[in-house]
Length: 458
Image 1 (cartoon, one colour):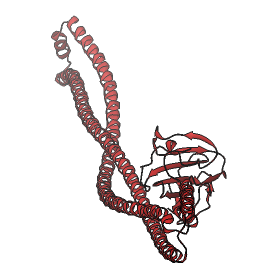
Image 2 (tube, helix red, strand yellow):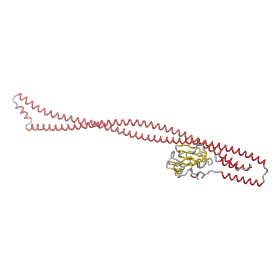
Image 3 (spheres, one colour):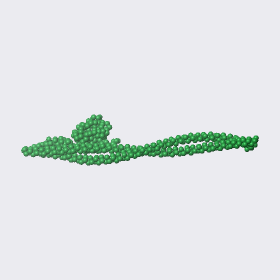
């Protein structure tokens, strides 16, 4: 809008002395200023609406972030409970493993006892067999010598009663001894068999106990596996929530950045409105002065001849034609390339997201120029754009963006001319390699609303 002043000044200087000569130019200049004021009012209303929308989005983002944090707290509580359960389960598993180890020791001891008892039983069986063989041999001998008669002969062959008693006692002792040995052997055999049976039973009980412990351990291992799975799922959920929170935080930061930029744009619009109002007042004052001067000259001068009138008319038309040639109009193809370099990335969808501009790659320090004249509505460092400059071009109703610069040459509120250096190419912010990210927005800048710059570039 500040480009209007030179056009108006040129028109005013080319005016003739007659009032009829200046009126058309004056009317055209006033209409242009009024149109620009109306356009700025419209831009301000649209900006106010966008600011309200951004504020609503910020409130919504805050609510979502609070909900997200509440969910994170809930998942954290669940994870703590799962950790406690896991810790308790691991303790129980360790206790079961200790019990199983003790049971294995018992089983091994019982196996040793069974082994020793088997050896003793085998020895006893051998002794019994030997004793049975000896008794069989003695019985066979008795049978071969007449059986009981031999005992009688032993008794009847006594020399006297005392000898008889002695002989009878010896025979009984032998028989009782043989019988006692047999009974003792059988008793020992039964006792060993009982011991073996008891040990076998004890072994079975211990093995059953071990099987129960193994089953309990298996259940605990299954519980541990389940708890580990739940923990893994909760950790994934927590990671997802943390990522969502980070995204919401980034989104909120982008909204705050939009809000800040819109505030700056609103201030720039107010400045432009004030400038336009000042120009309008100046034009009205100059027009009033011209009208008064024309009236004085009309009274002082004699009526002009028709030829002079025609000359004046021709002069007036020449003035209007010259004035018209100096007025520049905005539109497609009216933006100059902001920097020299290679077009490394175009506008549109990319594998990692949508690209709302074009990238011009060159070495760090390559000069970057304003594509058209306008007002700087932003000049600062951004987390995403790095060193960035926004320029609003009121005569085109466009905003251009120049991002990732290594340094800035202009400040907020500055008026820049077309081709004026505004900074140097760099690799700041979320950038990969030295380049100038260039955006075009219809009207004021707004988040992710950039249009394809190519139709606007010369």
